Image (tube, rainbow, N blue to C red; front, side, top):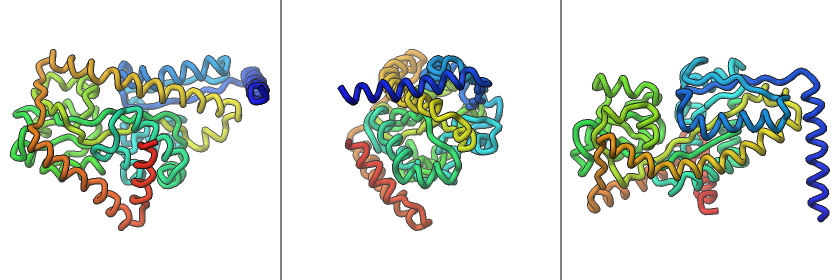
Length: 339
C-alpha cells in the first residue's frame, strides 16, 4: 500500500512538471535514421515511441523524423548525433565498430537464441555494464531503444551453401567487425557495407550474396536478386539502436527524461516480441518469392558450429590485446543472456 502511494505521488509530481513544460515553449527533437520510411522496424520501434512520448507529455515534446538517410548515411549517424544535426539518431554499433567495439559482443554467432533474449541482455550491458562505459559514455550518447535481430542467414545468388566449397571465397555483405570475423572463419570473403547499398552491389556482382536477417531481405527489396538461403544458420545478429546525444538529453526536463525511458522500456519489449513473430512469416514470404531454403547437412553444420565457437574467444582476446575490455564484455553479456 505504501509503495502504491509513493508511486502515485512520484507520478503526480512528474505530471505536474510535464504540465509546466507544456505551458512553456514546446520541445521539438530531430530524429534521423537510414531506414526507408515504411521499414517494419521504423513502425515497430521509433514511430510508436515518438507517438507515445508526445501523448504522455501532452504534446510538450514533439518530433521531426528524417528517415531514408535524409540527414546522412548510416555510418554518419553517430557524428550527426554528436554534432546535434540530429538530436536522436539510429546509431547501429556495427556501422561504427571502430568506436563502439564492445557492442559487437551481442552480434557474435550464436550469442543468444531469440530476439528478446538478446535484446534484454544488450540493454543491460549497454546501460549498466561495460558496453555502456566503453561504447556509449565516451561517444557522448545515451541509449534509448535497442533490438537484437534474429540470427542471420547466408543468402546467395548462384548456389546453396551445403558444404565448405560452396562458401569458400564467396563475397558476402557484412557490417564489419564481428561479422567479418565470422565470415572469414567459415571461408567466405566479407564485403563491408551498409544495408541500403546491397541492392546495387548484388546487381553489379560486387556481392555474391548477403549475411542478413530475413526481414532485411524484403526491407531492402533484394529477394528478387537472391535464390538460396541457409535454413538453420546461427551466423550472428545485429543491434538496431536509437540513441540521444548527451547535450540534447541534458537539456530535457527530468520528467521528460523519465517518460522517454519508460516508453523506451515498453517499446523494447513489445518490438522484440513482434520481431520474433514476424520471422516465420517473413520466411514464408521469401519462399513464395522463389528463394529456396536449404538446411545445412548435419556434418557440415557441426563443422561450422565448431569453427564459430572459437569466434567469441578470438574476438575477446583481440580486443583485450588492443586495451579494450573484450573478455569482460563477453562475460557480462553471456551472464545477462542466462538471466
